[in-house]
Image (cartoon, rainbow, N blue to C red; front, side):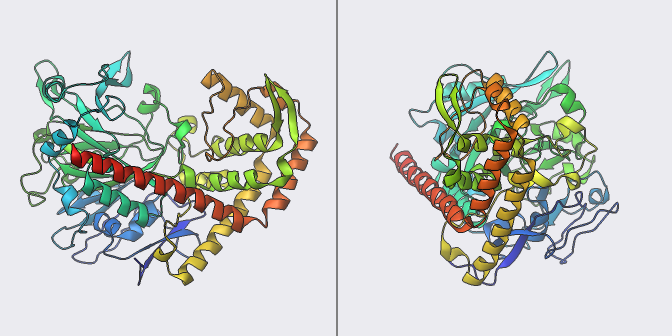
Length: 545
């Protein structure tokens, strides 16, 4: 397929201003409203890279105003509601930006309709298949509070019969989470692959969440059912299929563009200090985008008690009639960026550099011959993970992403071309020019921020947190995944030698963009082809069960 008459959706190299509060009405062709002096970076002065989407794309059916999604991506959450009739709350500065569209005025994408019609019986069909392992393939889980801290409580056994699952769901208040639904249900596989292609992502994983309705407790009133507050290391798009769920989302990230190894369970004092958006209800057909690093939780509640408490908490009577009651069923599409980030691109450049093969540390706690290449991999990972004003866990909720700059660029994602025919040659040339500019800027950032003492402390923390030689931070799998476990030896290295090696790497990598980029694409394609092959096999096996 070739995307013609494409809508260019540009990302920002510089950090954008705080979230806008605005609305979009597809029937009237309305535009965003600015409030509280917020501003928007304009396309042209801040292009990062582009999606090339037709207006009838799958992403466009979920978020009809693609410009609003462009502004939100990797920056702030975006809520897209169906048949939203009131604009009272969207004028509030404390309200999540809301993309308002009317499904009756906007034709749904053909791949989306079968997914929106999934029901609880379909979930039971998946759970009735043989050889499913609890904790790996599915979870029975719920939010618990112990000594004031939130946790995710899960049942212990490796497997449960369908009858046991239903009993724990109905009587125990446990939610059902099914992992990797794109490998278990054909219509979900199609929509997941569509999103991968349209969002230029290497991999998209899909989890299904089925949560029982809230129950009444004589002492405590209505009891919420759901999960503990957490953040994800991937960007997520949530699509509500049936029932309703009340969501709470932090306005600012705890870890800006959090990476996989940075995810952890937030503590109660961190949750209490959060500046959250107004709570809102996801209704059938609604979609929600949350960037990685933003704390959120979702629960079923006594929705009758919310009546009249705000338009964002109510569901339109015309939205998918008959599907707003009962348990909550939603899909979460995780857009994984770790293999296609700016940091990953520089790791490929380090791996290819011929100037880094010399030994830096002859012996490191039994490991012989630690090279400068391995040390630079660790240094790049440290630079990318360095604490920033955007990280509210460290600096408090008053910080805004506009204050973040420099090495945060390393955490951003790059566009991945699964098929060269998806993008026209002229557009591809422009896109490659932008990516190379980002590559050169990232080299400058690493050159200026690499610090021998800080990488030794980073290694010390990594050894302490893992307790062994396990590599908790990530770089592309083609490289030696070895954790340098001798921080004292690293700290004693010559700063002059370290800087000289950095300069050699910079000099060599400047002119090596094309080869480095092609290597990232090649590895990404191999990974995607393997995933799609596994998906096909899994779906065929499921069809035969």
